[in-house]
Length: 288
Image (spheres, one colour):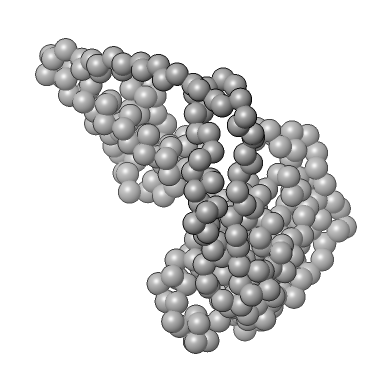
């Protein structure tokens, strides 16, 4: 967060908190580890929502503080909706200024109201502080789920691997995954910042191709040529009587029941519903 007081006891990073709960679940569930009665979660991504929902299930009253509007939250809409159904409050256009404390422990968090200004590099309107709008929220713990960046400190600066302004590896000058040191290749979140798992997998494939190309070039060997993919045309036959079939809604545990435990929220389809879902058209290649 970069604010005074974030070194107090009961101030957690979002991923740090989730990891600790997963590793020490028994201690959290039997009350040996505790957050307290009221918790503030800072951020609007999936990690913030996950942390808030876990904190709620541990018995805390949870408020998410987010500096933009709901439509700007990077978290999945279904996750936001689920959190709200469970009773988690989301306070929009709010940014933390200071974590308040006494005797080394959190007692509250002082925040400032924001308004939206001009568009920034992310394509969203930049939050601008509203002068004189400071207020303090009494809480027992703060979970900061913002500002996650890759840890690239394991690469010594002497190795000549450039780090860009987003604290990620700079790549692409010779090979798509190649760094500024020809012996190092990178991909995934270490290059793009927080992104999807499938994106990281694709980057791994790209890096493998680039490393192969670099080794072949160093050995004076010709570049590897991937075999051309054979295109297979599958005729599309749709029965004229076929009606549009909307996606089946996944049954879920009622929010009043699930918010007090860690039982799986999604209950799964009944057999007949699973068959109906499997019979829906999956020909994404067809222009219909």
